[in-house]
Amino acid sequence: MSRLDRGRSAWLAAALAGLVLCGSAVPPAAAAHVPARAAAAAMPAASGDDARATREDIAAAIATAIVADMSPAQRASAVVMGHIGGTDPETLGSYVEDGGLGGFILMGSNVPRTREQLRGVTDALDGEDGAMPPLVAIDQEGGVVSRLRWDDGPAGAELQGRTPADTRAAFEERGRLLEAAGISVNFGVVADVGTSTSGFIRPRTLGGDAGSAAERVAAAVQGERGHAFSTLKHFPGHGAAPGDSHTLIPQTRMPAAQWRADHAPPFEAGIDAGAELVMTGHLRFTATDDAPASLSPAWYGILRDDLGFEGVAITDDLGMLRSSGEERYADPVRNAVAAVAAGADMVLMVAGSDARTATDMAAGIAAEVDAGRLEEAATRVVALRVQASGLLDDPAFDG
Image (cartoon, rainbow, N blue to C red):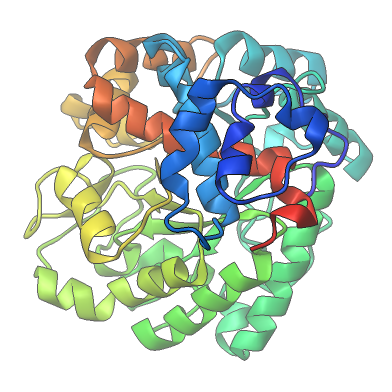
C-alpha cells in the first residue's frame, strides 16, 4: 500500500526505535531521532535473538508509543470514523483534521466525476505532508454496491459462478483502483452466506453455502492484499437473519453450533487469509445475546477468542441502528460508547451524520469508556494507520 508521496516526519520520529528493536533496518538519519521511551515500548515485538518482526509487529510497536502520548480525548477521536457529504477537498480535510478523527468513509456524494479529482479529495483527507494519515475507507464491493463508476469488474453473484482464482483477480484489480485513488480501506468483502433467507444481501455475497463463500472470501482478501486493507462484513452474517439492517435489526434464534458450522467459515477463511478489519453487523442472534452483534461483548469475544481475529473490529454504520426505530438505540453517542465498551476498535457513523456527530461520539467515548479498553482500541487503529502511511513499504522491512 504505497504512499510514497508522504514524508517520515514528526509523528513517526517519536517511535522509530521500534523499527530498530524489531530487527529492521532504519535509515541512520531517522534512527538518530529516536527517544528511549519509544524503544522501551517496542521491545516486546521481537522474541529471541534471531527473531525478525513482521510489518504488523513493527506497526504495533510504533502505535504503542504513539498512543502512549495521546490524551483520552485524542484516543477517543482516533477510534471514530466519520462522514459528511460533499467533494470540496478543503472542507473534508478540515473536518477530519479539526476533529482528530481516525478515519473517514467516502460515500457516493464524496466521489467526484474523475479519478484525478478523487485523488485530490483523498490527499486532502490525508492532511499535510508528514501527518499521520487517517484511514480513508469506501464501500467498493463492485456490482450492486459500487462508489467508483470506473470499476466495471465482476462482483457478488457474478463471481459465485466463477472460480476462486477469478475472484482473486477481480479484487486484485479493485485493490489497484483503490490504491491509485489514495483509499486505504475497502469495506468490500461480503462474507455473509447467500442463503434463501438472506434477502437483500444475497446478490452481493460470494457464495450460497459456507464452503463456496469461504473459498471466494479468502481469494478476495488475497487479491486486495498489498493494495487496500480488506474488511470482512457483516459479522456474524446476514445469511442467518432475514431482513434489511438499514431499517430494522434482523433477528434469528439460530443456535451457536449451527452458526459455527454454516456461517462462520467465510469469516474464518478471510481472517486466515489476512483480512485487516472485520465489520460487525446490526444483527441479533438471540441464542447468543439479545444485543445486536455490533454492541455485543459476547460476539466480540467470539470474534477474538474463537475465530482468532487480531485486527481492527469496526461497527457497521451506527446511524442504521437509529433507523431501526428501537428507542434504546436512538442516540448515536450512546451507541458509540456501547460499541467500544463491548469490544469494537472503531465506530462508523454515516446515516444522519452531520459536522458535529463524530466529535460528539468521541466526547462520549472519552468520558465513559474504560481507559484500558480505549487504549487497546486506539492502538489497533493507529497501527493500521502506520501501515497506511507508507513508512513500512520500504523493502528493508520485508521479513
